[in-house]
Image (cartoon, rainbow, N blue to C red; front, side):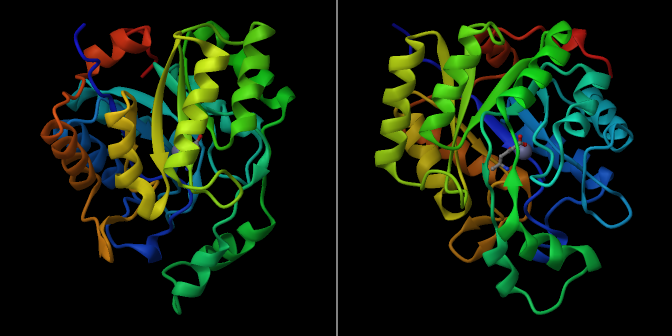
Length: 309
Ligand code: KMH
Ligand code: ZN
């Protein structure tokens, strides 16, 4: 049997890192679009997109802050565009789903449980900040509850059902797999589902290979063969866990949302650099990366001609 190709997702900017942390973090709409296009050119089949306020780079879910990015990336690449419904851990589900409702993308993220979601330890690394909002946003995450109740998940799934989007189910701990199983049993999601195992967020499961094997084994038990999976390791775990996942037959996610670095102590210059690195590792180890159309087939997506941007 032919080996499955590996889908690379690139998460371009996210809502955890702030402009002070790296000059290379894309924080304007122009930069987000340029990074996304270059990441697709480097081999990312899926682009996981957040947006930011163009005034000061703070995380935003305002649909108006997406429109220019989406149309520009669509004109320049064939990549699958995936709009976050996670937004930032401080935002409520009502606002987090508005961009997906307006633009009806092929994919959206969907977070599968409520949790602590903290990155306050990063605040100690910086003495001066580029923008006023950053320090409180980062330090205040010690008190974050990232709310994704069953009612929230149902609200997102129901509102987006007419759009036929495929969800990137973000699972930060083993309980989130059981949450997803419950949601499937009540008819919210249809197979094949796409799981994103998230490791190393403070509040979720740790970034260890044992945990990856445990998550995968649990998913096998709960979902049989009718699921696809990918791995995201936060920070220093990004490349090691992506490499392990690709060798286990999984897919991978990289990007400056998840790590600002290209190697120990060295900031990545852009998203494409991380995509190029994981692509090289995957290919050196004997696998092939999936094109956007191959990813569409593997994940049973509706197609790039059925979006509203
Ligand atoms: N920032 C990642 C750890 C989302 O956008 O829905 C998780 C994430 C959430 O990507
Ligand atoms: Zn995200």
